[in-house]
Length: 236
Image (tube, rainbow, N blue to C red):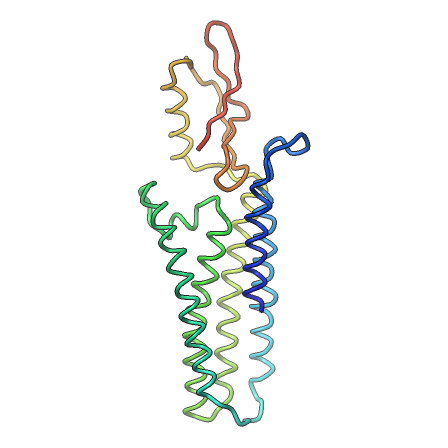
């Protein structure tokens, strides 16, 4: 339920961020994506990490009860396949964009301005790893008859989700408060400006992300040519 809820929030993030600019939001609504993606990340932390750790602690000394391990393993196997398919799709998309920038798929996911892709990738990665941990814990429970193995697995999965959630919250915060572009991107845009036939020089260039796959505006970028001053906008 938590995973499905987070997926819904990421869909909302995509829908909200593509609204066109208007008078009240002249730079568009791109940062809506970071807001809703951060809410989804908090969902991972609360409904995933905290609940999982709490359940593990609560069930650590629980009395043994009758359980159908076959059904449990089937559920984990189906979940592993579904989460794995989603992870592979996110990886392929990241690899495709990363190759265009000559960086690895993981490097692209970490640095990309697209929070929904990053959220899907890392949440699916955590889910696949967590399912393996859960299967191992349940297997040890079935083999030894000791319920604390399940509790230990729940705590480990909770810690894993907590690390992922904190990372996603941190990255969304970076973009919300005005994350600057990389030095490589700055040099690229500057070189494109200087190679433009109508630009003699660039005295100051400020580049800031205004949303995923959105324009990068040189807020203080101006150039002189034939005693005229113009504002320049670079789309990346």
